[in-house]
Image (tube, rainbow over all chains, first blue to last red; front, top):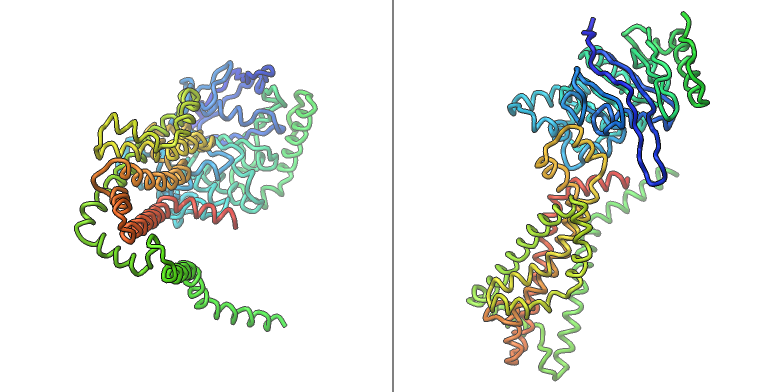
Length: 270
Length: 274
């Protein structure tokens, strides 16, 4: 059983974008906590401020109100405890660096010996199945492989939590299934804590141990749903389970309600 | 039917491989050769002494430039040119990076930069001559005053246009300021920087010649003007030929450097086109 101490605490988070044409309240009031070793998926209707929430978590955006706490201390900027995997891998990897160079870049300012750094890079590339591609450039790889490089970069950084922003939205369905299994594998074998933002309901249920369903903007947490599927998951059997169908139907229903602006419904019966 | 078509295509391709090399060779050298012939014919028939035959010019070329003149005139010119280009690149890239990174500075300087760029650099020669005298420094300063602009402005543009997701990535991984400069900002701007350098090179060559024609006791520009004043027509033409060769040499070196520096860029473009 993984350590269940509180890792990430979000309290009454609110974000208002100020603009000349009036303020836009992207996030209304979001509160949740995440334990170490958890895989939490965040879904919501499109335009509900998922990316805003994620940037606030990662310290890339300053919330208007409220608090993000990591290990008990407030997050005020980017922190070594977090690594972000962005949706646009093509713009997040540097084309002038090799795959190894990309994975290594964030480690340069960490106080590591060259050998330690090399080892972390090699290990991370092996973990995503790209041990052979270290000397290639990202643009020589397929989209799915490029996103693997971005994941390897996050792994090598050794964060306490990996934050993923719709990472598989731009790859084809089969690649996507492989990458989902990779995320599950990293979570199970390396006990990584992962926040996974997605707009794909099936994906959220398949991956998560918990699914946070967000309302439409201004956003709050409409439901915090525990996914009681076995932790060994695979694309065929897990997705064929009646419980999987039940859960995905429930989340789907919640999101439809969220779009219509209705509030809470009862959690799914057993 | 299909087999037939494909076999025909293959034969055609096989014949083309050797032919293509010959063809590109002919394309590259055909027109210069033709022009030489036209020139030679025209020169033999003409009585105008200002248009000597190509062979006379070639003779003058070997006599004039291979020997002490190389050390006295060609090397000083190349030295000033190299110094001017090197300084232009350093100043242009360094200033351009700073200005490109700081929005307020950019907004403050932009109108001024546009004005300075619009001044034709040769008119600065009399001014710089007054300030610095007839020295090597003056000539190098003149070269810089013209060649720095395309490099500076392109660097500003390239640095400013650094991709927002790439910047955010660097921020989220807490990449330090120097690493960001070395691994993000400069490489991201390098295609624009190289475009600026390419323009700067030709400006630098022009200014090298002009500054030497104005006031000098050595150098290619000086020598050509000297030959012209003394009616050494074939020698004058040979100087023009040498200048052309220097230009071609510069472009060649630049091409080699560019291919190294921007290998990723050309690869990326090829992939995204496919």
